[in-house]
Image (tube, rainbow, N blue to C red; front, top):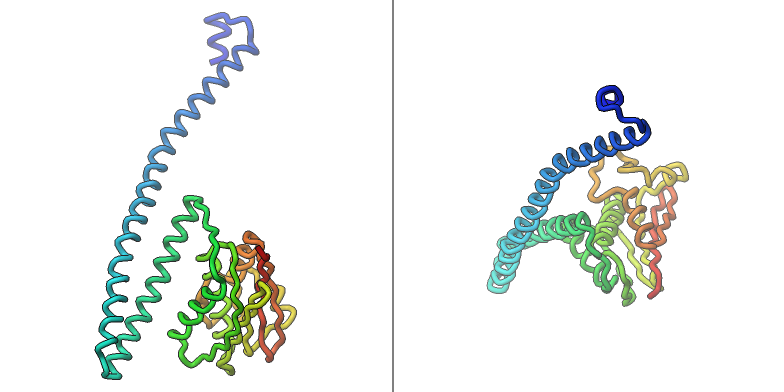
Length: 254
């Protein structure tokens, strides 16, 4: 192309010619990129809208099941049927949890502000009730001080779930989980197998599991650490083999 302009068209300013050609090439590249990206953006937008609509439609049947099981329990005395209803309620609670997590992920992708003011003690109580339905043999000792914080509630709920579930799964010889909330610090203590110093250095590796046969419940301690860093929550582990593990979440006072 340069040879054509120099020899045939006889353009004298070579530098200006190169600049013009580079500009044309860049403009063409930009146009081609836009033509390629626009359909992809439209596809992603349609998927997001479909996810939001589907999520909204899921909320209604979940609420309907929960409401009707609650009404049935009021007029039922048979112990076997009550246990069946309890299992239905537990299953609905798990579906509700997944609904909240999907809603949370959609909001994160759209970069919405997810921080809100809420009672940390009430959030911990709700998460313990959730686990109590799944693990009725576990005894939770709660000592919770009324604590208001500003944070990502759904994300913090997943963090607490992960820590509690790890405490239960790695405490096969103990059925006790102690949870204390005071002075903007949440203590979650188990009396399980514990960890030595080598394991403590590895726990924040993505999806690290000291026992490969155990199925994890949550998001992995690596993601727990990243969440705490983003939310300015101080995260500490105190663990000793055959004694247990204490996880501390230190929140900023507001």
